[in-house]
Length: 190
Image (cartoon, rainbow, N blue to C red):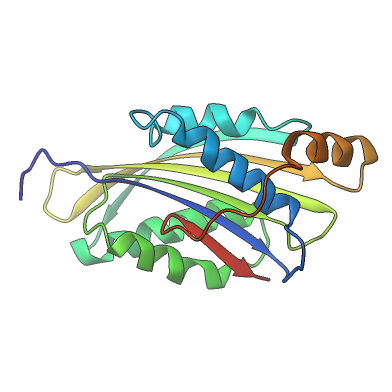
């Protein structure tokens, strides 16, 4: 394998109840996918994802946190470790235990990802959308099997019980349908 090869992946996930009409989270996700697809040369750049997510109007409690983790593990465990970091960052105290397995399965198709962007829109509660974006960058550590993982987390909420927020979300994202079934899109029933 070319040691200079770099595998970068991105995954969009919506968690919510079964619905006959698209959830607001699905509409927002679809719009973000379309926005990020406009420039293929930058569509996996973490800064592009962060800028796009921060353009969503009327976010409450938007926060960015960054940390570097060092992990020693067999190479085959890297997708599971990245999935675990994403779920931990996205959960915000909520139970998202069932989410790690499909993320790890998605990542395992890339073998040894060196970067991964994970966007979660959780509309389990009909009156709120919890949004989290985790951008991971993996680099080799000094020892074999030792990885340094830099994690940047952007977290925010959209309060849909606020009529002004609901109106703005409908105006901006109302024309979008749910995302097409793509390998980079995952819909999980709550």
